[in-house]
Length: 232
Length: 64
Image: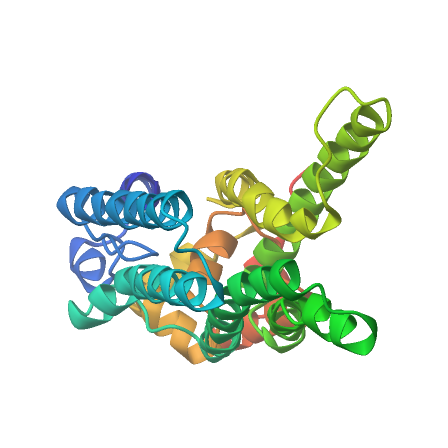
């Protein structure tokens, strides 16, 4: 997208009758965001598919053979979380290694450094919390602690988002983030309201409220695509 | 709001990355402002005009 934009910028530039030697000094052909190439992304999506399929297969084997427990659940989700975190970091690391595009700005870097560990801790806590609750049926304060445990790291992930809004000092990037997040929130509210009524009339399976945050993250994908299209 | 940022930048022989570094903003911001896809805030518009040694109305103008 940005390469098309850059080509268009160069065409505008030529029509402005600027001198050719000035043209040589500007870097319009550089993309605004790193271009890692088709081969990289084919390999990346392939690795993502393999990791996800491996995780689902491992869960299936554990459950079918009666091997599912707090420990096996934690180890499986931990391995999956580490692999996903490594995959999520790969594009930025490869771009840095190839010296492509600008370096990540401070607020974005801090956001990543807050968000990823929170999600990693979440993935480590989730399976043991569920299994422990199902196996021991705790009561009282312990039940509350076990129930809140998976939510706590997610609160830190939400905090990372809030801090990003506060710390991002680039007004364009902040506007992009705010608009895409607002759009995602709108999508999420529309889906939740509609589904909530369908659920109330027993027309669809019940979905617990914890699904709201993952749903919001999913809504972010089309929201970011729409926002980027508007600005680029 | 339209602007002459691109012409001024070319006259100075500065790249988008250099302008972004001088303004302490991202290169995406420079591209978005130059193409008129994003209207900068008044403080950023003043900083852009000052960078090129121009008055703000010489760089940014409202297009009816």
